[in-house]
Length: 316
Image 1 (tube, rainbow, N blue to C red):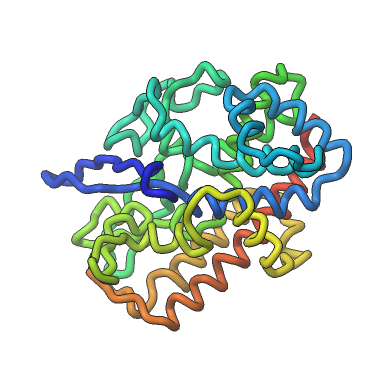
Image 2: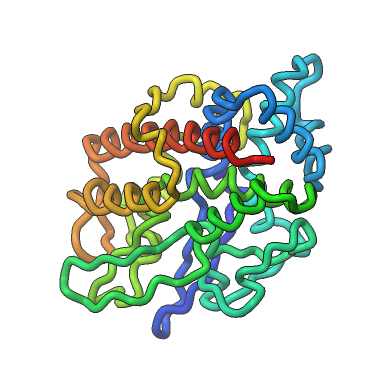
């Protein structure tokens, strides 16, 4: 994500204060997910999502960002794409605050599960991921916090299929656009637990990479694989160039399957050489980068088709 939109989140681990950014795929990747999804929406669903997105407080801003002369159908698609970035925007918006513990990254209390629409000015950072723990050194695994990305996907899709007011459905729609993308990023579904990180490495956020000047974390590396920035035109180009999603995999409707795939993908493709034990720093190789980018492109394409299937089948 562009530097101007980055937010540093403070997480207290033991007695150290650590910087843990929690963005999934960056704006470009999320818009690419939405681009793919829009190509698979049926006509009735496109009309419905357009009506719901018009209720978003940022809709006029999205509308103004579309170049003059853009055909109406493409304008609606671009609004749908920009909407996918909406849940990350409050991290840099005035008037929004952290809730929960550990800098807002752990849920705590009734507000963690509230679903009250656009009047909600809490960040709900913990909705963006499901840090399923695993360990390679026998360190006991911490409990999986709830709510998380998986519980919220279930909650939001339930609302879309209900007779709830459109204002609430509009809010849940943009969150669903975003979270379906998030859970297809392997490091939004896994955290490596070790003797040095007994509460986990926060989805690779504690693992440092030494691609000079050695400031990037493993999580950020994976977020950036499809590119950075917020250009809708670039996201369209990226989306057009993605591989076709496997039809049998795309047909899976259960978000538990999606998060399990990402969890296994993290163990098999993220925490592998040159990423070793501990928190680094590690130097990424060309081979690792190429394999990671291939997997990221496949996951984003798959997320897009699954999002479309969900909306086509469940949105009322």
